[in-house]
Amino acid sequence: MIGRNDPCLCGSGKKYKKCCESKQAVSIEEVRSEELDRLLQLFYDEYPERKDLPALLSVMNEWKSKLDKFLVEEMIEAIAIDEFFFHNKPEIWLNYIEKQQKRAVRPAVVEVLEHWKTPTVLLGEVVGVELKFMLVKDIFTNETLYLKRESEKPVPLGVHAFCFRLPDISLKENHYLAVSSLIFLPTDHHDSITSFAKENSATSNEESSKFLQNHLIEFWEMLGSNGYDGGEFTDFEAGILIEVMERLEKQNRNPEKLVSIIEDYLVTNQPNARKEGAVAAGAIRFGQEHELFEGPYWSIKEIAEWYEVSTHSLNKYYKDINEFYLVSTTK
Image (cartoon, rainbow, N blue to C red):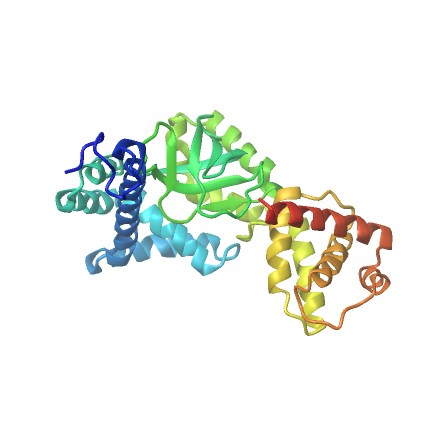
């Protein structure tokens, strides 16, 4: 075994502690992360077992009967499955984790699994965004915690995040990750979410940390009644995206590349336009300037007339989108 003060095996001439020791640590961290990711996926691959299906179907049917007029079936099932595993039948998850602890070889993995025995539900407002984590303020306990980001896609401040959480594999204090689905609720529903928390917590004798667990289906019913349909964008943002997609599809152009960029732009810049069409028109000009869809292309006047906006408004949002794109691609 190589000592920290021995010459590094890579041949650099430096001591091991000054050279590849840190790289080895990163490698071990990556291995542990991959193993824990695999264990999470394996759980959903292996469970529920046949004997648990009647109980699961009962939970799913209850959720569908109350939410199918608001949400698509796939989303209802995803939330109901986690509700079943972590609230209705938590012993299924606990037994699985204890079984994996006995099989695990690495002490670090065993330690993380010990902290994974009791997932908890989280609903909080995103109050800060870092490279790998978001700062989320739990709306029931007012606790501020770090929640791991699942991708590099931008996350807007002010949205609410919903998930079942586990301690992050680093086991740093107040750092968590989502067990399965991490759902972002757009700012359109900010007031109804905060009102639900305040009104129900004020009239309940339950611990604030347990309130959402005990009233989870009521929360989703409230959201659905207030117009939530499962989308991550506000009505205004969704309207812009629809305007762009429908226009390009009508002109036999593929909107996929442009829409991906505009989604990130809307989340990051949150433009305050009076008309959806002004942003959509700017997006179309941006798309053709960067050849994100096939030609032939159209004049600025033609695009403005489609959306019944001025060329001034079109150019304002074209420049805004272009600036966002140039900054984001040079990071």
